[in-house]
Length: 212
Image (cartoon, rainbow, N blue to C red):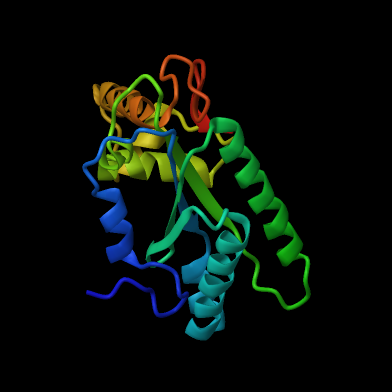
């Protein structure tokens, strides 16, 4: 079994799964950040696959240069990357993400640079809940699709109807609102520190859901 991604030199999907599938109870505050590199298909289609490969390599270098060496950074596959941050806190995660954004903007200011853009979401183990890495990230495909859609369209409010049609790929019908609400509630339980006071998936009352 290979554990290194040939393109980036980062741990590959096998290595990521070794960490994510661990059944040990997390004893120290640990966060997992999921990154989705935007526009890879567009770059491949318009500039060629060598440009797409370069974009992947540049993003991998960016992640590894900002995220502390003691922490794990891996390529989960395609345009997906994962970081696992050990002995951390909400404030530290936010600082890492701010630094990442600053460095990304700096890189994008260089001439001839293929612009880097990404969406990310993160989950932090709670002091008052015993959980494994698997439990921390156990999102269903639908929950992941909702999270990714909201993160890729930050500050854009999605009505229940629009969210349903974008994620479920079918016309909205009477009763589908409950389906969306149940998935949002379950998603918040998994990714929010306090699901009753959501900081990631927010509600615009009477309008819908959004991410800041």
